[in-house]
Length: 218
Image 1 (cartoon, helix red, strand yellow):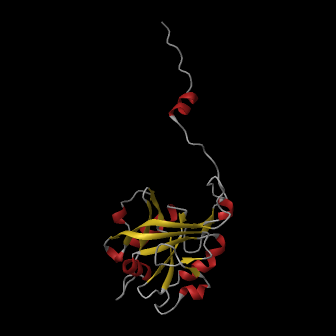
Image 2 (tube, helix red, strand yellow; image 1 turned 120 degrees about the vertical axis):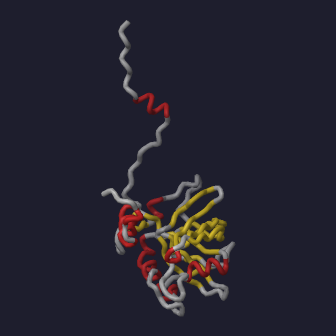
Image 3 (tube, one colour; image 1 turned 90 degrees about the horizontal axis):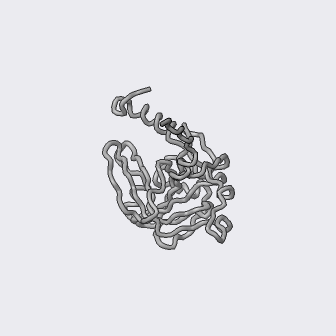
């Protein structure tokens, strides 16, 4: 296959991207409006962007119709904050409930049976069931044109990690963390259980492995 992105219908391009760029980490984002009403929604167009400063990025696509902005984006613009709650295997069923496009008056957190806890540095609440919660302040919201797509850059200002996941040396127990990633289609996910290790190489490593060159005859 060899095709320019501009030549593909939007839906076909989307299918190719989400079926090849994977697995993708999942951010179950909690936010609140000016009145303090909480919202939760999952996003897999998400990743850590930098550690100095500590930044995360979210890709948020709006809706068709008279109210194009999703609750998450509107809340971030109103309060300047949000929380990225990472999703482990146990949290997946509730996360899929939060993905439903409920009317604004429905409390998806209550429907999903998710308990919230107050954050330390931002207005948005965090999810008690999440193993890692990243409190973030909005740095940039960049509109990207069609279909009300927005790139949100948030700065991590406080981290919560479940007790027992980090040892005294600062090493994370990845198996106990048990995070999941998004795969292809609407229903497929992957865990982090299947891993392999490939040590990082240096120039010296490559030189040591290079076959000896035969000496030239005089």
